[in-house]
Image (cartoon, rainbow, N blue to C red; front, side, top):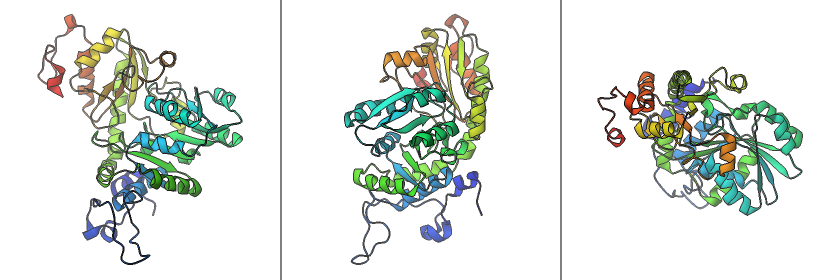
Length: 403
């Protein structure tokens, strides 16, 4: 029987009574570097934790089940996963990337990839014609992030698959923002899916993790060889934490999406907010594409306010929402991409994308939606207009007391 994704999130793929020691309901943490051999040439199936570990195995199998992958590799961070993906390419190879891409990926490509002789073109992958025009004889892959970070552009993955097939390219998709609960790119033809597992999969802002989910056995075997050679694997304890987070992925994603929709609608009506970027809004240019390729819109919102002063006021005065990098956890976080996630992106590129001093990114958590709206409302108020309290605090008290 094929179970629904909610059940697979909760139970994974292991028969608990038969496969967990003593019938442990939670996955046991095999906190060991090495494993004993019963005899010469005999193995328990595990020899050294850099190569494989039972706790990490269960996590990888669970994520493979959620994404529909032949194999999944778990890494010490999302950037470690991106780094190993680059090992599939040789000097002289060219990759076409979404122009609006996580700043850490851009930094990886420029600081590491280009030094190895790779080249990268950044185009609006929402426009198939621009992608087609960027293809060169040496192009080997499309690297897509959808929704994009941080302006929430949507790329049609079916169109990208058709283009990749025409030109014999790999299709690599960063699926961090939606998780396999809302979008499964392998089902749409992607060859490789990347996750920062730190975000929605782990879901609690308490651990770092990354994943490569692979569509075909040959690529999986090649990556496994590189994986054990480079050694940037996820530890047993962090594997346990990520598995624990995945158990509630379905309920978290539903609640976070509902909250995001409420906040996006509220933000649209605020006089200090000039534009809201959220794919769940019917007026978003990628709304219909996302409806056709996913099961939801996620809970990432970006918005532009009227002045830099307003943006800084919000960041300094939020009390419930936390001013911090990262995303996808149960706590709502607000980020200033200009100075944080995209500070290494060239200024002219940021300005082209609209990542200015007036641009903010919001990762919506599972709190009460009205509380989140109230927090943003008081943070946006001009000082002379302020009159209310939140959580018993007045406007004059410090943010640090709340966190």
